Length: 192
Image (cartoon, rainbow, N blue to C red; front, side, top):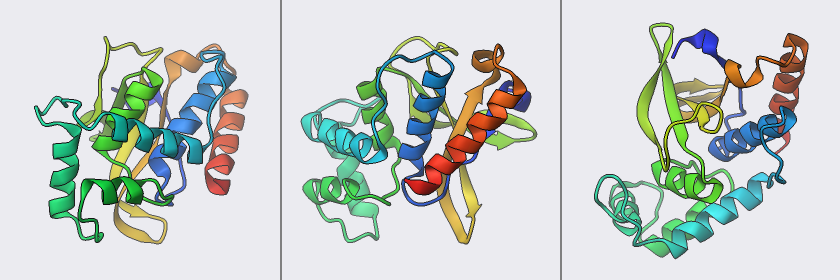
């Protein structure tokens, strides 16, 4: 995707960036009239995510592994002191815990929306392999996120999610309103 097709909206790098990005995306959707349901807070979204994971440990992922097996792989390769699936779920239920592919599966199912994740390369956004499609691609329904590995504020070498909002969804909204939404979303991610 061309960079001009997406509005890149920064999100604070605080360990909750995935959940803040999802919540920010939903709030922008609501502001533009693409969503009429109540949006949860970051804490509730994380809790719902962990609850879904607990209930669906036998869910088969596209890799052919179950969620339990994917979590066990994380447990075997982590340096966070997490030694079991139940410890992982307790760990992930706390704020400031980096979410990844496992949590993307859960949030996609909770929201019943595809989550598409991109990196920036050569002036374009390219799919990075993270993300999950539960139905046919739909620009107006899919959630688009930017993912990077690099410097985020004072933190070096971290994974970080931010919002990529399609211009096509926002094209009937004035440029001033987009600037206003970017400011409000940025402030939102700083206080949560």
